[in-house]
Length: 208
Image (tube, rainbow, N blue to C red; front, side, top):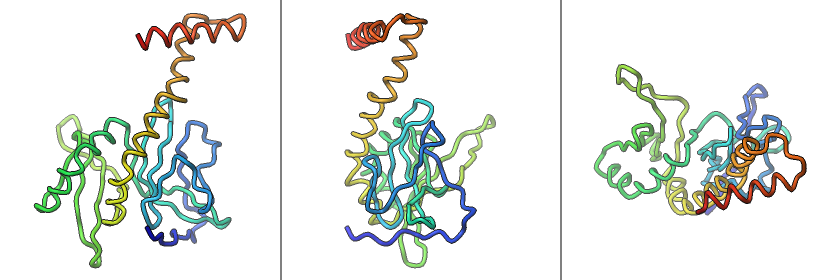
């Protein structure tokens, strides 16, 4: 797929977005060195898998170039938890059918998708919302806008994104949660071997 040059940022005050629990971890990268957990959809849009507060998340985000030639994530986009992402993936065919019928599509009562035309270009808009106590809906900004090529690319590579999400959930995130559980059983382990033994026991019991 032919890539269009990313948007260049001319505003030095544009606030960068952090995807990781450690806010000091840089979320930017060079165009010729895309991290393995980033998936280019087209133009300046990427799908990213990350973890924050021990929870895996999937981002559909627009990037911009800074003065150093690095790409950084902007606030233009949405963030999904794994359950919503998996629900979205399962409904791809139904979503496309809804668009053909001129309808919007709702996923898990928290994500609405619609198709619109702007200057003769068709875009798929994804927007999150939540339900208030009075049952009215509060729509959140900003949104993710993918053209048809990017939308099709998202559908084409969704298995790769899901695989990376699962790997993260049962990798770094699971290990962090496991270590927290270990400290409950051995608050002050005498040696590193105590931690390892406890992890083995807990992991085995969880698998069984």
